[in-house]
Amino acid sequence: MNTVGSRRRAVLEQMEQGSIMVLYSGEAIPQSMDACCPFEANHHFYYLTGLRRENMALVLSKSASEDRTMLFIEEPVPSMERWTGRRVTKEEATAISGIDDVRYIDSLQGAISRMIDRERVDAAYFDCYRYAMTDPDSCNMRKAREFAGAYPAITLKNAHTMLAAMRMVKDESEIACLREAIALTDKGLRRVLATLVPGQMEYQAQAEFEYAIRMNGAEGPAFETIAGSGLNGCMLHYNTNHCRMEAGSLLLLDLGARVKGYNADITRTYPVSGTYSPRQKAVYDVVLRANQAVAAAARPGLTLRQLNEVCKQTLAEGLMALGKIDSPEQIGTYYMHGVSHHLGLDTHDVSAHDETPLAPGMVITNEPGLYIDEEQIGIRIEDDLLITADGCEVLSQALPRTTEEIEALMAR
Ligand SMILES: [Mn+2]
Image 1 (cartoon, helix red, strand yellow):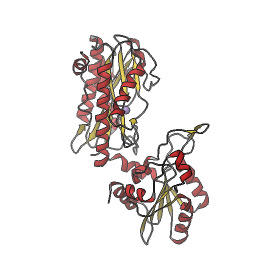
Image 2 (spheres, helix red, strand yellow):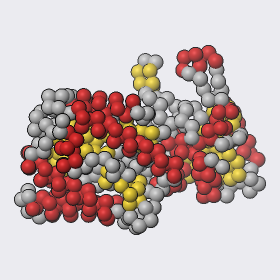
Image 3 (tube, helix red, strand yellow):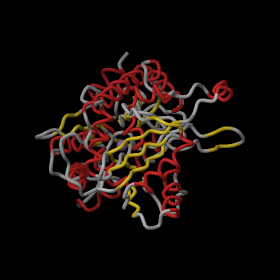
Image 4 (cartoon, helix red, strand yellow):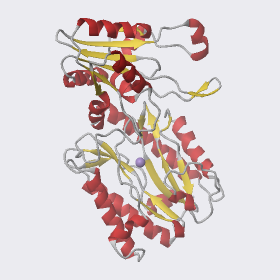
């Protein structure tokens, strides 16, 4: 059984007796005129099939007689393939997913109807994830509503809950993708270090990074690259990257490469002129100490909230020593986000909730920062951690992080 097959096996084991799960890969979202937004397959669907194309569906059925797995794909239409590229054939879909029972998507509703007609189905799992109440319905949410309307006596269950819990713990193949994504991110950052000069535009630093990761085989950036210099580095999700980088300022880069859908998420803060001022270095080293304290503390059993407490305490001690604040409670003025989130197919990856204790195989970020607007100092140092049996492995250990290492690489 291949990797996605063993994941489906684990899902079937957790499903209620007398239930089905229906997951759609999704539909392309129109952007304007005849253009669509870049298509992103539903991540649970990809996780369970290895397929990332639109208009597909996975059906798992757990009934008294037998477990069944069916995959539905688009039927190839030669006249359309001329324009939009060749579609996956049944044989290719079987080879990628390990699912033998592959059918065309037009027969999906009939197949579900027959299953419910012939076997006892008490519950149906759909991906009903919603970030905000006001968000538009996803494709899977729409299908869940349609299903519930047609079969009001069958209990609707949220597949997301089960799949998020599974996806929090990464298997070997996922960790390999993350390692590769981080290695490519390292290459991109080294190119920025080799090319960064005062007077350059922020988008040029972004372009050097994205050039290097694509040249080395990344699918592309994990998310919109953040390249903020000076005061822009204090804006947490700044990504317009349209300002000129002044001599003496800091450049905060929050970025990552993507490999097979898996995202690196790294932040480094470089001195545009090649050396940090004594003040910049003093603040930088406070953030670095917090980064090191969190890496030293991360281990199974701890929660992200507890890690954030370690981070806040270290940052507060540092800023009190610098005379910037008088008491630990004031740290919120200069540090206002969390130190960690899960990382995987989503950059802010699925997690059951903040209070889930860490376990071996989880991958999280470690990203303390200090944002001092009045001094135009915005510093964040973000690494990616793999939780191990007794602590953590810093997956991004090889990426230069001390001021000495960074200044040495920029000296040329
Ligand atoms: Mn992050």
